Image (cartoon, helix red, strand yellow):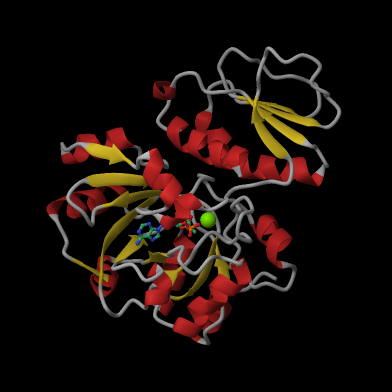
Length: 315
Ligand code: TXA
Ligand code: MG
């Protein structure tokens, strides 16, 4: 059910949850300082309690209210990338309830780049929001996806389709080294060039254990169809219940049904990926075949795309 900005603000202040638009994906928002409201997020999503949430803010004063120990690096990053698809993990203030951070002493914070949501946060204060999907399902990139997971009556602040379509980069600034916990639009080279420092990528072993970022451990982004890298050596792939996604420049568009080609347009692929996952289910395809990425360096979005697709494959 679509709600106005006024209504969304009223619901949040009453301790309810509301689906909100961001430039990455839709979020399931609640007042970050209201423990009972945050509990509802975990219940409604079916999310494990030890998977922490991101706090969304609309100005830098609110950053002071939730986190501490700021560095010059943070200043440079927020100057350059906020509002935008970068979440930073910082030491948390006591005011942030443990339920938000899954008991960690750090908090992930971002300033989303969506005018409606920034306006909403101005009225309500910081909102904590995971992606507005049931746990384990692909993230929602438009209101229709939210309705699919939560039903017609769920309050949604409709801000149109998400511009980017993949979740924010999560960057850990709370330790001695700077580590990307989840790749996204802001890639390691952009951060390295800005800070003139080495930026690490979370190790595979830390991903599996969930030690550094609990979210990496959980089943995620999963359609009902099984997702596979397309293996050209396998013959006789059934066309009728398969869904194909090609991205390289050389593969031209096709008139056959369920074939989607991007010809090197990785931003559009990122924007559409979760919608493809959901559409394939909707039309009852049993397998989604995706052209493998042979070279990570040809586009900054490839590590993020690969990360999301690999999770959909493995889960
Ligand atoms: O683009 C996005 O980030 C979207 C929109 C709604 O803002 N939100 C989103 O939230 O993707 P969620 O909950 O689906 O993913 C948050 C990720 C998880 O992998 C979680 O483990 C990690 O951020 N995270 C949150 N707080 C953390 C912390 N204190 N330390 C390490 N990782 C943290
Ligand atoms: Mg999520």
